Amino acid sequence: MDNVENQQITETIPVYGLLSDANIGTWQADYPLTALDFEHIKKGKSLTFNWANSLLLTTIGFGLNLLAKGASQIAGIDQKIYIGEWIALALGFVLTLILYLIGLRLPNDRKKVMNNIEEHFNKSPKKRQVVKGDK
Image 1 (tube, rainbow, N blue to C red):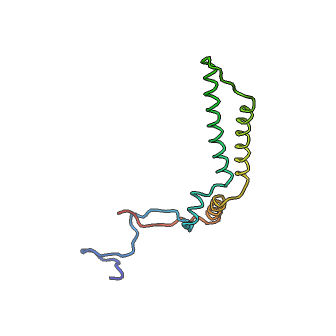
Image 2 (image 1 turned 30 degrees about the vertical axis):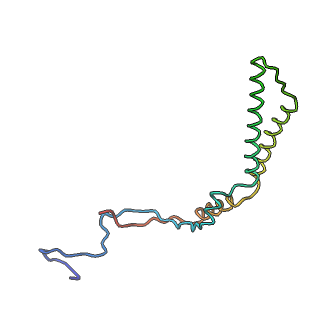
């Protein structure tokens, strides 16, 4: 049956392609993320961040040693803490901070991929369309 006009319908007429219980969805082109892009996001920290992390952990360990010497002094055990140790501790923290700041300024693979993704979604228009419902 192609046209049904001015007739009483007594049997089921299948209608194909009709959107009943339709939803409106928003569509936007996806970003073609490659395995290499994913690795850059996952492990793409600047080399200076790795150095800064290593130096920070070393400095913290050195600081714990000074803390142990201080605890010994409080307990009445003759344990000297030299001015050079305090200078080394402060220098470790200062160098760690400098390395982190340099790492924030340097370009790296992770930043490049993240900028590409952001640029893609800023330029890719969002489109609303009617889609078939759940029923």
